[in-house]
Image 1: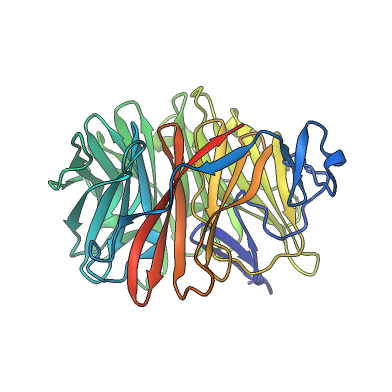
Image 2: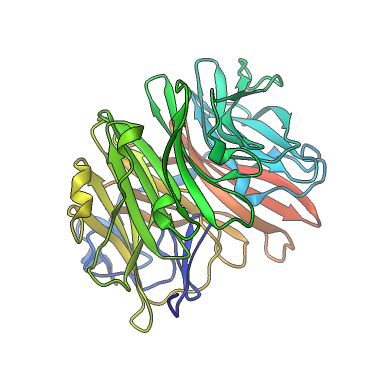
Length: 442
């Protein structure tokens, strides 16, 4: 075990007490040579742009509030209960977003509607989860909202019909056709990733039993008659711990890493049966320097992916950089370093921050939210898929001065032509989910 520690928590990367914030410059030192937002100290350093928080940004990049912050799920909607902050999930649809959290006390999922126009908050629904659950991604399509994940040990999709106003209360969990023995009780999917190709949904799951010493990587799908066991190994094998899954141009790509080992891998092939070989991704030949994924988005052209990778140099020469690259030839990822990646920023002097929300991409742009310590504000970061910094860090919400409330987590989604930033707020033991509609433009 290395004398320093790498931890992945809620999308955040922490190294010996320092945290890499996905896509957002904090109060850290920005690499002045990085092409993802040139460092600056005066307006003259940024021809045709503006110097904001020490970073050059396009002069026209703005995000403004569409209306005052609003309640999406009130304490009454959540029964006054505590919610799982990591379960906050946004599912975008035409002109609206569906916002869900898991109520741990009542063992249920509660989901609300946010509209692009008119009054923002719409109908709410819930679904019982007596055996535990986790959901990874979701969307609205074809008259229904679909959340992909697991209920108990079963992998599948939780489906709610939609209405003109929002969402129906008649949710159903549709189990995928078969469950691998390696993922059956007492084993459970400890990490999951999902991909879509046409009407088919594919999943990759890392399954392990509580307290067990081994893990299994399984791939299946909504149309598969039986899942495929890709590989098995010790619980410390990072090449079995799935983080992201994409299917583009008929090729499957699994991205895998593990905070305990600090290693990152990919597996690729034309079918699940071709994913047996794991290849390590390295930005340096030094075994002490490590990588970790914090985002993967299929290109709108359908011929590749945008990857977000963190590269860490351990103490005493501590350096943490965020690399963004458009990858069309997956075999190029075996090169050291992989070609085509741009450093968004480099952190040299990092304060302690709360974990950021998962990044979101519309194909050309990447957005990510952050709740800085001590949990009183929500910030938004915005950069392009090629690494150009547009808004390094924009405060979009602040609690009133002196408020005893705490913001526990946040995330962002596309809301028609706008953005929705949502966060979990706790005050005097009562929990709510609140939101802010934003209009962002260049």
